[in-house]
Length: 152
Image (cartoon, rainbow, N blue to C red; front, side, top):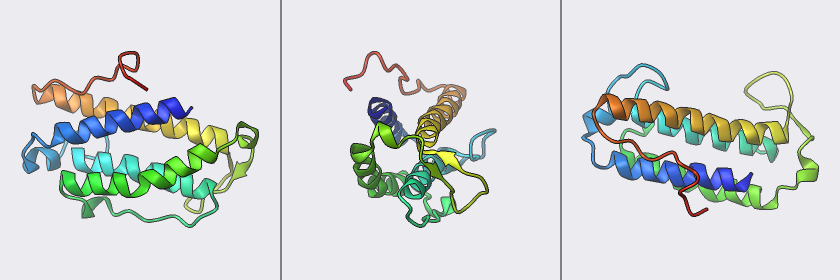
C-alpha cells in the first residue's frame, strides 16, 4: 500500500511542478468537475488525506480552507506541511490493525482503517484523472499516470 501512496505523492509533486508553468488565472479558472478549479482540487486532495489520517490516529481534524490557498506555492506548502504526518503514520501502520474501526468527526458511521487507506489512494487517483482531462482541454500534455515507468 505504501507504494501506491508514494506513487500518488510523486504524481502530485509532478502536477505541482506542471502548474508552475501556467498563469494564475488558469489555475483558478472555473471548470466542470473536481472542486471547480485546479488549485482547489489539489488542496482538496491534501485536505482529505490529512483529515482521514488524523481520524485514524484519533487526532482532531484540521479544517483546511480550500479558498485560502490561491497560489501553487501555497498548495505545495500545504502538501509539504502534512506529508510527514501522513508518512509517519504509514510507516508505523500494521496490517494487523486494518480492521480497527474509525468514526470520523465530520460524518456519521464507522469505517475500517484499511478501507480508509485504500479510499485515500483511489480518491487521489480519481482527482488526478480530472486534472488530466483539464490539461487536455487546455491543449497541454498531462503528467504521466503510468505507475510502471516510475521508480518507486
